[in-house]
Amino acid sequence: MPKNSPPEIALGSVILTKEFNLAGDGGRIGAAFASGVWSLTGSLKLSGPSHLISFEGATLAANCNAIRGASLNPTRASGWISFSGTVEDTPAQVYTDYRELHTTGEAEILGFGAFPFMDSGAECKSMFALQAICEVDAGATVLSADDAPAIGIFPLSAKCLLNNSTFAAGGVAACAFLSFQANGQDVKAEDTSILNMEVASGGIQNIIKFRCTSVTGATYLLNLADNGLPGEKTAAATTAVNNVVGNIKVLIGDQVGYINVHSAKAS
Image (cartoon, rainbow, N blue to C red; front, top):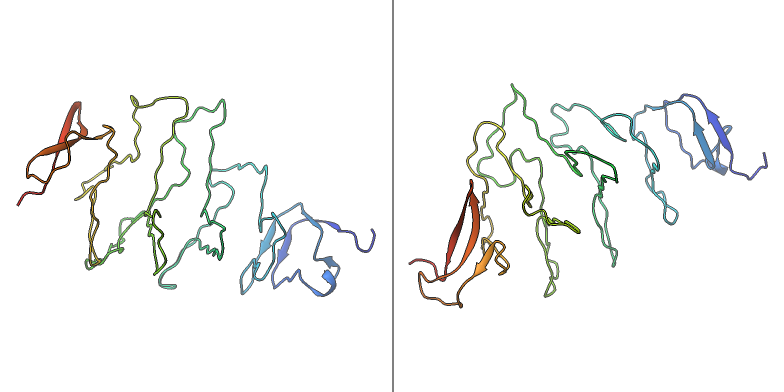
């Protein structure tokens, strides 16, 4: 093998029990090279007192990933990556996964990308890009939130934080954006919706709860387009009390109904 060519080292089951720094002097650690192709034909098992895998300070080449799997077909329900574990008292709060990415220019951060596809020929009842379940088992206790916001059992928690930033005219911000797109077809007659909810067992107090912990709250409860689907403005704008100026179309069971919109609040 030429001295400077990328080596290919075929290994069986490899067990690393101490720090293994591939950025060693001259690109070598003992008889091992730090660059080239490593072909592991068995399992790579790591154990040690610190981070098992650390890329700290590494610089990625252009158009490269830190870890990449292409044409890698899952063979079990847990998919490509599976972790499990248990905590007790420490750390007091812990993430299952933590990622932080900063932009200092015009690069737009798009967050976690999950893109499942049903390709031609697929026949499925369900598909999820994200599934989040919080489970509280028998014997566990949900403690009082003491009426504090953002304390509770929430499978999803989303906050849009504008921290003394400049907000240009025409800018848009929200805690969530939801879009439904049906190309080349109309599925209005089917069970389709932007949000699909259920109470699977027991009973709950509210479907939607809103609270205001700031100086002011929201200007409107709803902001609907005036196209009749489902909101419609039926009269000119006025401030006269009890003038019906529009309606919101609803369906209760099999009965279509309308919530009338009045031009001014009752005194």
